[in-house]
Amino acid sequence: MATPVNVALMGLGVVGSGVARALLEKGDVYARRLGRPLRLYRVLVRDPDKRRALPIDPAILTTDPARVLEDQQVHIVVELMGGERPAADYIRQALARGRYVVTANKEVMAKHGPELLALAHRQGVDILYEASVGAGIPIVSPLKRDLSANDIRAVRAIINGTTNYILTRMDSDGLDFTTALAQAQELGYAEPDPTNDVEGHDAVYKLAILASLAFHTRVPPEAIYREGITRLQGRDFRYARELGYRIKLLAIARRAAANGTEALEARVHPALLPQGELLAKVDGVLNAIEVEGDLLGRVVFQGQGAGAQPTASAVVADILDAAQALAHGRPPTPWQGDAELPLRPMTDLECRYYIRMEVADRPGVLAQIARCFGDHRVSIASVIQKETNEAAQTAEIVIMTHIAREADVRATMADVQRLDVVCEVGNFLRVEG
Ligand code: NAP
Ligand code: HSE
Figure 1 (cartoon, helix red, strand yellow):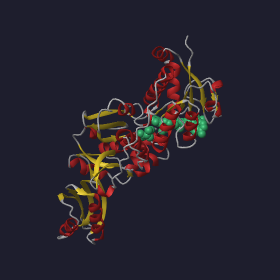
Figure 2 (cartoon, helix red, strand yellow; figure 1 turned 180 degrees about the horizontal axis):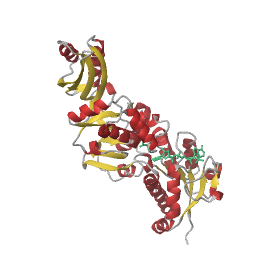
Figure 3 (tube, helix red, strand yellow; figure 1 turned 180 degrees about the vertical axis):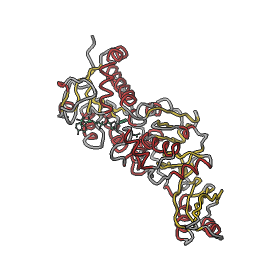
Figure 4 (cartoon, helix red, strand yellow; figure 1 turned 60 degrees about the vertical axis):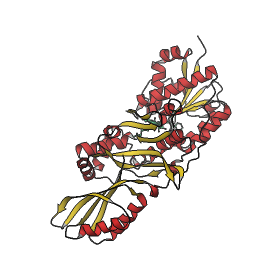
């Protein structure tokens, strides 16, 4: 029997357990594909006495990172701990010691990806991170290889399963945000502290990785515009449906011009999507990533974007790939981030807008509001009066604009809010497509 490839896991939580189970239960299959066995050699955890979801030999468990990072017998280090630190430091140490690294860590790859890829290249090894975006959905590899003949024009994605579940329940079942979030937590989709998901940070990390790959440029997460889903109300979903749209948390990166030069827009926010679009039909915890290339046109990758087995699917594939590279000495992929595209400011975005506001229900109100729009060259496409509150003598109106510049729409909103006939601007959403 050929000598085994020794795999060390750092983390044995949801994903680590899925990966360990696949390595233990499908070892024969992987050994046949590889021509050498993959051996689960060591596993780093915080608490060695914790009850585990699978029978794991206690002799391979350790709480000492040096027993992974400094052991010459470890061939592939698989980081599945999560969080920025100490994960990024351990990955850096593993690469510096000439180990292949596999990770599912979007935060580390979004913040440190280019630096770690460059280090891997200098060391003649590689860092593979397919599971960091969309879990088991193949997207990192296709962007690196299968789509490389294209100039990518746009990436539009639903890349957070928790928020997509919440938005689907608010839309289909009329739940309010708090109830839908509580249900997502009961089902184990949302964490006890859901901030990372509902405020859009998780999607920003994933978009930073996708945009850097697709556009060969460094897109730091802090440069991406971000809005979460907490301001959405049930009525927004009802009105959007009446107008022919669904509301989704979209992560968008697109080539755009700024001051006559090529730039990139990168943003995460809820948006109205026409009901007929493929992305509008992606419901529940599913993820989908649409890529538009100059040669291929649009292609959509859809599937389960979280969970032990879907994520293990991508992590184990990366382990197999690293093992092949180790065996055959394939050169690592260099970091190809030389395009240096500037990011276009959000205020320069041009799209259509949905604006919901509560106003006094009396003659002349719409004329005052329309004047504010006109003063900032924002053209109104339609105005619909929705519910009226007879006791308070107020009405809710929904305004759809033609394509307008975000800076002009924001200036319009500021003026509208100062009118004494406007009680409040309830929501303001971008329309995509
Ligand atoms: P998790 O369930 O919280 O597991 C984390 C594991 O890491 C635990 O086994 C924990 O040890 C260990 N750990 C954490 N900090 C450690 C430290 N300082 N030293 C030693 N061990 C440490 O996390 P997860 O859901 O599996 O996620 C792992 C990674 O995969 C994250 O980067 C996440 O973003 C990514 N990911 C997750 C999913 C998913 O569906 N969950 C999907 C795609 C990507 P103990 O067990 O002893 O506490
Ligand atoms: N929290 C993420 C989501 C899963 O809800 O999609 C891990 O990337």
